[in-house]
Image (cartoon, rainbow, N blue to C red; front, side):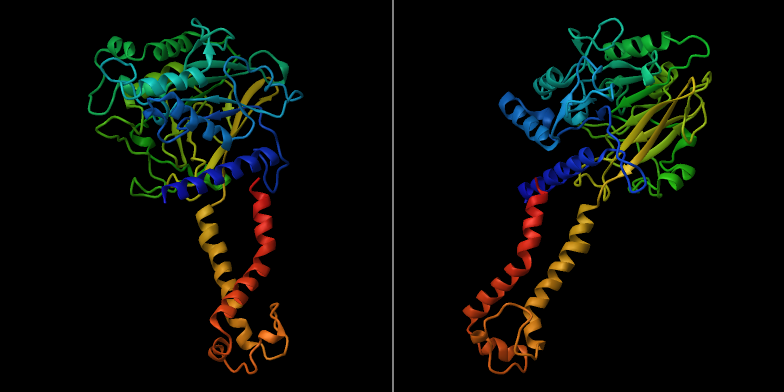
Amino acid sequence: MKALVSAFSDQYLRKVWLAMTRQGLGASLWRRPRRADLVVLLGDLTDRGRWYDSYTDWNQLQLRWMSLFRNLRVMRYSLHSPLRPDVHDGSWPALIVPGNHDIGIPAYETGKPSTLNELAAGWFQHDYAPLVDDDDYVLKTNGTASWNARIPISVNHRSTTHELVLLNAMDLVTMQPLGHGPIENWDSAKERALTTTKMIDLLGSVRPPAGQDVPRILFSHVPFERRANEHLCDVPSRSAVHGVRRESQRARVPGGDILQGGDLERTYQNLVHINVSDYVLDTIQPAVIFSGDDHDHCEAIHRGYRKNASGTVVTGFQATDIPELTVKSMSMVEGVKRPGYAWLQLQMNGDVPSVDYTPCLLPNQIALWLQVYLPLFVLTLAFVLFAPAFIRSNQSLLPIHQNQLPTKRRNLNLFVRTSSMGAFLRRLGRDIGHIAIFPLLLWLFLQR
């Protein structure tokens, strides 16, 4: 059963990715297809990737994952080619943020990967982590592998207009895990997440000249905890525009917040703790945040952090707001009926940088099976079984030989009795084959 579920789930992801890349990630009934310049994956590429101690087995899992996303190319040290819309080699450049299922959560005492996750975490970093300069965390050809990086973006061939910030949320969770009170010794907490807090403090010290706002777009696997008056996942005005709402009712109210939680084994934590969240948002002051981990849609607003925000506006929000979009999982087996992704646009309105994003929904595969495929199959089967009993002419609607027809067709029982069971089953199989052959060929063609 597990193998069957995995096969259908893989097939769903493969078809979704092909449709998105062929038609354009921003395509819809009302918009022309557009090709994305960059794909950002928010972690948890696989379910059990952190638990492998054999490189051969771990690598087979990664090859399986890569086979689902054809032409995806991990960008580790250069973003020049994907940000030139006139130059494309058919591949889809991607940046990766690590998830707890990829590298695990570091040990609280040391800030290092646990013994159980150490090998897999090392392999994952070696193959996927950006290469950055040790001093400024900007991508560098011969840099150091790091899950923390900053990528300057130039829109319309200008100087830097936006900045992408990749943050290792596993380090942030380790700074203040569940069961621990407020941080009293910040030096000790930062020591457990040394490379991550070093970049955060660096970003806090780097400010653009007055009047030249460079909005930062922050990517984190784990969502940030909200303050007491911000515990909603559906912003009414926004939901009315894009039509996407939270499915989960774990907070016992529709659109409720992501609840803080975890497990005793420390394999996950639902939110970065409030003290660490305040530290990150106060220091970096991002314009917008994209997070993962929860699998379901959650659109919230962090207020009170961007006190000195200048002209940058995220469409649909106030200049001082920091919206955070927790993006839906793309998988059909992660507890959401409608999987999804997010479409992000970085633009310039004259000399003022702007940010616009839209949460997007993917097909409900389970509903298609139960509400479309299954009823049509039942109707087809009923037609094949019962139609001959109600056909009073000498010709059947189905391709049945005349010498196989009963002499009288008063009811279905007479039809079955006057034919041998073997002949009946052969006829039934032939009829189903005649009806199913073209849909089957079309289905096989669409699996490519």
